Image (cartoon, rainbow over all chains, first blue to last red):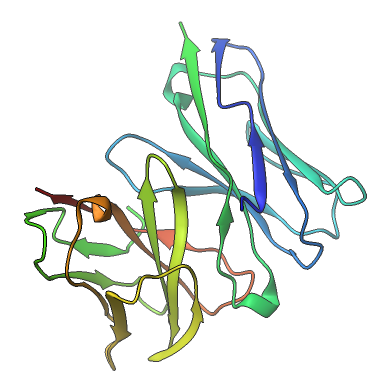
Length: 113
Length: 113
């Protein structure tokens, strides 16, 4: 059973455009929500993370929006670049489960020149 | 470079065999997590160790076992290998556990022939 549902499965965006990836969860005990970026042949790299006490966090061109009541969070990639072409995973964990991450299924992002 | 080292990068073996995957966490990190990534199951949590002690278990098969040594490196042992065990195996480490950033190695690609 997928505890974190991620959409879309893939998306194509033009250079300079905005990429938006959405995730939803059911477990209200989740208290840490990271996003990872993965390139072929590499491990997932931590991109940005948020905790439920804030509704938005921005780091450079990457922004997480968090809606606690809807149990949803999303990643926005502004001014998308060809180098952003990768697979993105949302994840969630709870302190009472020792931080094990539950991952979404992943979104393959392709940024066209 | 995440600072997490996994060896070997690739492993090719036959059904019924046993293999050992090794992980060296980032300097100062006490927690080690193991994850399996496959096309049909995505990224799945297997097991976590904190300072030498097992803390959390996921859907890890009984044929799989792990341990964390006093120098904090960890090994994942896979035995009686089946074709379906072919996957990428990732190790991640964090300073502590429960809502701490996890940093991933580049994985071991296991191919069962």
